[in-house]
Image (tube, rainbow, N blue to C red; front, side, top):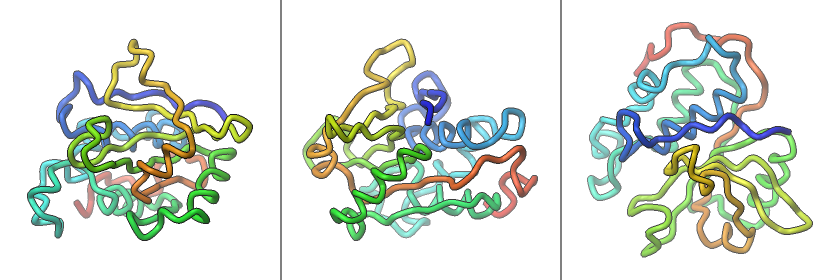
Length: 189
């Protein structure tokens, strides 16, 4: 399975809260044929990144941006066959192993967070994992908080570190699409 086309949140609208937009865009780039995918700013609107977190059922302290619910709702509205795991309840060894196994077939978005660790931001961060290297016990991932010209955008993370930083959120798409099954992009947003 190849590496997805990288999308950075830097230099784009909503850059400070754009990791979920960029990560979802990378997943769509991998699974949906060019010309059928939404533009970045359209996707930002569909993922409700400007909506107050309290309206979504969270506290203001959790920050603005795309939440797991927003990404999953978007995929569902578009008729895209997908899978997901929920934060904190799913970060079990069994779920981790299942997620690592899926990387042999397709990339997935992972929610990253560690309290007090600035690496993943104050509210968490979305990355796109695309390969598990079992021999080395690392995953390869794309990090939208960097520009494509910065070598840190394509990195590795030891599985032991992943266990510490993964919040249990993951989203993947099951198959390739020539066009989106639902043509009205943000119909229910």
